[in-house]
Length: 153
Image (cartoon, rainbow, N blue to C red; front, side):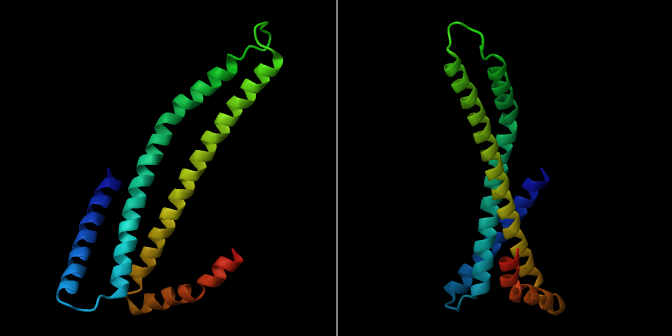
């Protein structure tokens, strides 16, 4: 519930910032590129957060049933049945493990998407804190060292 409240507050702030930019544009003033960038990043953060929450919730909600189905399918494999050949049973066994690996891969991709969303939020936080002169010194240092971070990490 707290995440939804924060999302609503961020949406209200983004709408207010968007209206202010439109008003500046209507008054034939030059748009500040940093304000436009902040607005685009805010919209991207909100969209990515909502997508992440919906997909993550669905993934976690359905994972119990998926796991139970896969385990039951593994337990119900007939290794000694005369109706199935050993090769067919082995193929079913490998297929079940492939389905489990695919589900794990999807979950990992969702987690990676969440990490990219958090990275974008961190970027926005750095942009916001650069307003104060002393903090701006830190953020400008981070800005100049960003290439080194990417090359050495």
